Image (cartoon, rainbow, N blue to C red; front, side, top):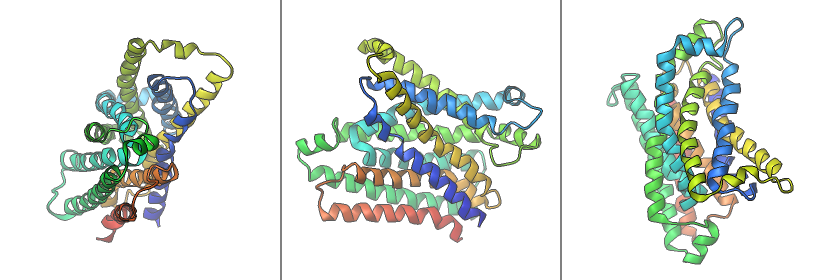
Length: 344
């Protein structure tokens, strides 16, 4: 029962993340770099900080917990800086490939690296025997599902005219998008490495008597802070290059109120995936295989829900029946991959 509850919580968070790019369409009069930075303030600073506060037991402070585990905090933030590169290119993959295909390729790569590297280097698992082999099988099935979805995206591209591609995704560019999405996936996996590096912080929270429910959230905050630094440098550089600093001073009508509200909405939806992951993992503590596989589960669900949004946003409109069949097959494989580790 705990395993099902943990998966449900992770799924709810994943659904939030996959919906986080929808508010972009409601932001008016701002350049991409301005929106990306402002939603990042909420997604990577404000809401992670509020989440981390939930882990602080009575009689202690968040600052004291992080200071007592300074090395782990700095390592987590360092991986966050690297993850920030993935965050930047992740947004660009959506720009060039659309929500469905962009997230599928990037998250597939992220799923593999983010699950297997911590299992090998942090948990010291042998991927060819016992629990390690189960994890490897689960990740392989998830990647297979994502590859099938990627193939569906390729079929869609072949069957669409340039006008149709631009109508579905304004800046559609398959080759450039695939390269960006692969880079995004590799670098985004650093988030999982940051969480593993920040494990001593979670352990310290438990020792202080705060329990397991929110124990991973302070480490999550340190990773997102590192990511914010990378994104802030890039976005401010782009503001200067494109002369878009004036976006921050646009006060005509209700532009600021509208844009801040949708940036905050995008931010909390994005953060919900890691809030859900942290809380969900507390219910998987007795199932070491599912716990180690939880990152891949999150990524698989993100791909699943992002493709649902892709259908809703009509990114697959007008494609052939064969393409839809391949897409559905890929989604079915992803759903299956979530439950595979629990079958052994």
